[in-house]
Image 1 (tube, rainbow, N blue to C red):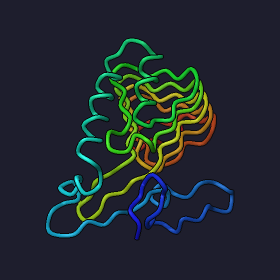
Image 2 (cartoon, helix red, strand yellow; image 1 turned 135 degrees about the horizontal axis):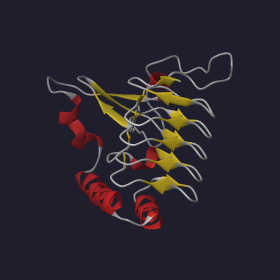
Image 3 (tube, rainbow, N blue to C red; image 1 turned 60 degrees about the vertical axis):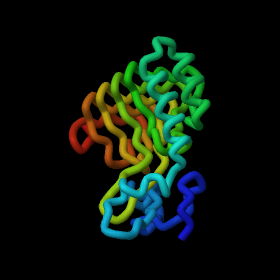
Image 4 (spheres, one colour; image 1 turned 30 degrees about the vertical axis):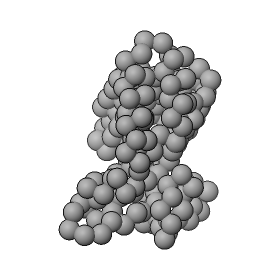
Length: 184
């Protein structure tokens, strides 16, 4: 198994096939599994997954972007660490892309990431960790305090309500809310 989350190689947990409607597979099938060994939980192995200096650099840039009042500055800073940021993206104060794998985050044109929202591209579990892209399509909106898990796509024009936990793809022009987020 190759553990390269940037290229998406590795082993997914689902069958990886799209369903008959041509939709993306379930979230876990859209993530890559990276096994860890020994009695320690997978977070104890983070230095094997990512460079200490890379994570420190990402963290400093993300902290600066979280508190920067300028939307253009936020986007410029986040592009420096690999986040794909479209034109006119609005990042709310304290919004946070993934610190370990920011290069797996894509936010398309005119999307809004609300105050204190988090886009996670990794999840550390007991015996493995998973990585997956988070894609926020054009003109999508993510409300304040929402958390988007790895392997999730927020469709064009979709809306995620504040304080929601997004565990699966959100179809275009759909509003979801809750923990876990469901269509409303």
